[in-house]
Image 1 (tube, helix red, strand yellow):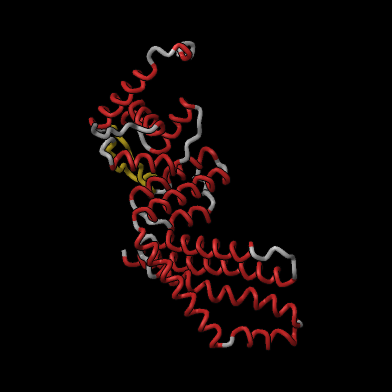
Image 2 (cartoon, rainbow over the protein chains, first blue to last red; image 1 turned 90 degrees about the vertical axis):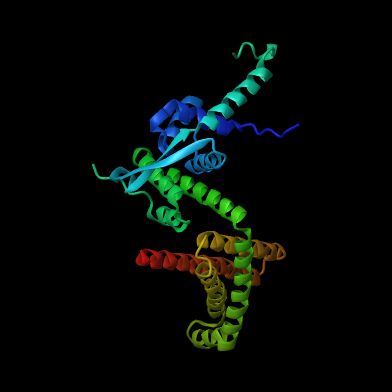
Length: 110
Length: 196
């Protein structure tokens, strides 16, 4: 059987945050979105390590914005989910839903 | 409203890491987020996390450089040790300080000075011979030195005056390694900026 790589939990969350933010997805906004929706703090170091890994796998692409004074003269890096990334997240969603289906213990939680 | 400056030392530490476009974006994000959170502890925690992740990544991708850095460190330590012994630094300092301060304070001064003079140049050599990932290699050298010192300290379970001197030497060895290493990194950064 061919080896299939599934997304890790944090990778899953990051890609969903990118999809929610659309054009405005850069480090600070992504971490705030995750904090707001998941209720957990995210360190920018681990967020960027994940984004870098996702980009190296071709699931996410990034582009530099313009440098602004409110960022100490440094540019923003904007992220977008690629078509490959969308396929991957659908695949992961399907796999999770298949595992979820029919579990009576979790019905209340849904 | 003018921007609030984040802790200078933490920003400097972040700047020592290899500055690629990613690192620049992280530094910008930290700066922007700091303007809202205004917590130095938060900023330090984030910077240390970024540095730890960057060090891990560098070591994974450049493990040959890591071995080379350790080899340079060992060679430099041997060289600095021979030089310090050859120049008779310990003897000279004892000779000068003993009549003024007495024997015991002179021993304390020598115990701080000698490891600093040996481990500092080794840190400097590691930083200057590794333009790529210099800060990571310095941190690797300091971590290796720390591990060796912890092993040596663990063998000294009994509390004696000699122990205090030994621990003092260990602390100054680490301080010298960090000082020499970061001095080298800062010098590398300065010459890179001048070249641009």
